Length: 633
Image 1 (tube, rainbow, N blue to C red):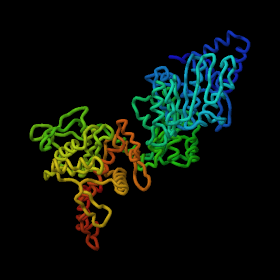
Image 2: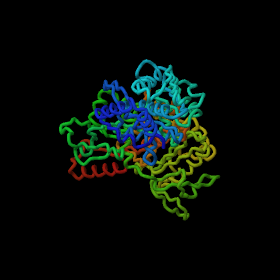
Image 3: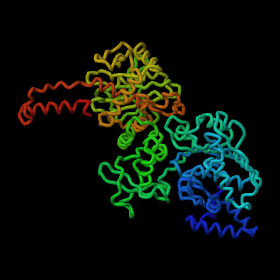
Image 4: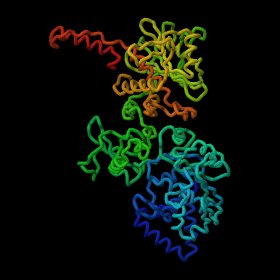
């Protein structure tokens, strides 16, 4: 692979020793053309040698200018190959698109520019193209612009190494190699013409025309790097990080030696800290058995358990504590430090609760499909299949017919978030047994239209029955595709054990003759508030990891609960669920809670003494009711 050799191993990384090495190397090359040729060849063969022997950088935060000495995590990022990870050189050589999600101030913009500059200095006919949120961000007098960094690097290179350079606005030309670096501001036409060996889109999450930029640059280069920090889940940047076709590079602050000193997390169960360290050899954060030497015994640990998301939930350091306090906003901390796109929104569901619940999740006990009659929608049998749409968190038994299809009696609710059936948003069913407070099943399909999905839902409702042979209560979200779904349920199939639209926010709770649950700003806030409470208090047990993960995408906004798809920026077009299971799960809880039997115990006035016979009977009766009540689960 290009750019990977062992020359860099001879270069010291400690800044003072590194400066001595650079001075010696320049002295050796000053009057010896043969030595210069050898050094140029070493730079061409080994990008890390070039960086550590010649590149300079400036850091406004540290108020310093000095040699660029790479950290081990930066070496990995540049040169790693599978199966470790796919580094920058590997992506360039194999023509891959990569998205780099990072904590702030990790030097990634410098690193991408160093790669471009190295390619253009030592390889012929390389064309690189840079895009950022504005022209000033690409090239201006400010040292924060991309091209100002390139100029700074060249100001500190010996002329015999760099060769003649054309230095113009938004353009560099390397006369010795015939290579070029060009740039422009992001617009709807950015990258719409020409060809390039490599494209860098810097601060991609902040670009308004992000979707167009991504589409346009696809036709001009195979190798593209999209660099940025998260601003939430309603961005093109977030979509790219969830796409399996895109190489994902994660550069978290725990990899940086200045920031990862004295890593710790707070164990709420034991009410004491746990200690960690970053292992440079494995590139992982590992747990320590005891407090490391030098960690202050009286350190004021943060006991909130945050951060809740990102690559290393709960892990902090003294540097992180100071930085988070300086930032002040949980949303900004999630964006700037945690690489937590869902926490970057005004998150509605408590991320710590969701992560705790996910630890109890498990794979379904049974996966397959339900076969049913096509004329009367009556269940026939359950057929196992690894690619089936139906998932059950219990093992079904053999029915009296001799076929697989026995379901234990329970108080079941089949609730539905209806999709269009055109491959974008899926249709999701949730099956909730309120008697035990557990989600026992889920059904998902992206290609069933609402009418076909209605037959599947009714067949499942007729399969999940109680002791009185009543089918499950069926409820779905409307309007939208829920209208066609509801018409099929009522008019074509004739299933009547359904939820009817109810005015829930008046004293009478009047039931209408309109089927389905209507999603309004008020009703959505009520549904998600009730479901969030049920999850936090353990009244709703959900072992479906994917469904719980979707909770983290919801945000509180404008006095209601919203999801990015509510604003028309529907990431589901990429073929992924984005909150559909949450609506179905929350609707199941809402229906069950609404139909829970009220407490009918009558307490005498005054009540009997708790140690008397009457008192003990009353306590026993209350405990029996409590064991059965959905409200206590």
